[in-house]
Length: 328
Length: 254
Image 1 (cartoon, each protein chain N blue to C red):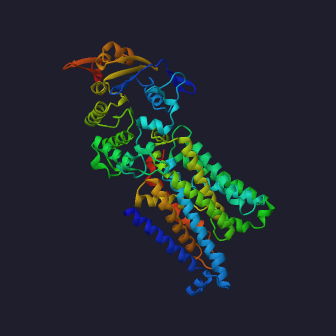
Image 2: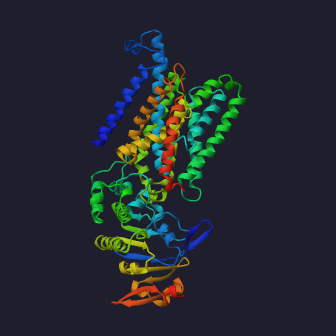
């Protein structure tokens, strides 16, 4: 019963925030005109709503949902409530993949796939590093993430500076990299939605088996999990979700960390319900964060990653302090 | 059977057969290979030579889910960072029985309820695993293994975080279940007196080989203990039962 209520509330919040995201913006458009625009009326308002606001809201929702879902899986796999695509360097890996693809002149369809590849390499690396010495600790995961993030950051900067193609639109690329959902076409959105959908299906499918990792990988094995296969599925699913999110919005921090953490308090630790609830919750959080990002200093629009960073980083710090006992 | 790790062989010349209903205490000094033996039996570590068979079938030929329906392991490390309830932890024992969609059926729910009853933890079912006492948590983890409804129960130091009364209570549960359900129980135990109180059979390991295999009463003799553990142990008899005590003078007097 409680579960149904939580799911219903989360779904309602997502709809309400999405509606708010479409109706509110830098250019004031009367609600009646917004509705007319959504019905397909040709006008300036129509263009703003259909080509800017709607894809942006959907993009933010996709990114937030994907990151939260990926975060829920990663936390379960690594037994680490401080893990998410951002702090593990998975997003950074995805951004490197995406930047390489753009610099090489890839089409918008290929970019999410390149981001997925980058995310996969990164998460597998972190997984391997975190397991050195036999046991995964919170600290090794975070350190591996730091190393990976600084390496890919340097590589991305190198490519940005040395690529003529990217140099011309440095500002746009930097805006995207910082977590901006501002420039997104329906085509990119369609590809990303497919990838996210695939990731969500995978996440919901594998989630019950993530529960068995509660006492570590060896106990998961004695509980009947094939650790190698299941871990591979979890990592690939995480990479799909993070790759799609990064392809749309660059590096959006902490949503994947904070949202599953908060949702766990509402509905407990089992991963299937955690994943299912985290997706709409993450989508809602990012749609609202994006709304804030474009309303705080109008007409300028901040990348949404700025908002999640400003709010999420202190939250992360609080969690870190509270969990200091298990860090080493 | 011989087994070990990449650059070292820990166990050699191990040849043991265990029947259902037996409660085997695996004892021996630190580094004798007790935990390694348990990991081989659990199918977590493939032997270098020889094999482990269950009802004549090689354990190595079973996949993880098939294995987990036959052999349950009570984990030694039982910290979890997530707020699972005790019931949810016990339900993890149903993992090898889950269908492709990962949902619990009526049989699963029944097995979980029974396992909670077995360890007298029904009242704890809805409490959070990170908010119950060490003894309660250990019972929950035992119930998780029982919910697997396996024929073999492997335990590595199950009483390590428990006070003496709880140690005794936990072992009583295990012994009762072994007898009533014909389980095979193999437990690594450090406390020799506790081991002799629960086990029907002692397996004494020394340097990766079996130094003694037989009844507990025959294992607890001064020559054997000195031989295996070194000097410093003595055996006294109280009400017909042998007890291991530190040898000779009071350590504080030295």
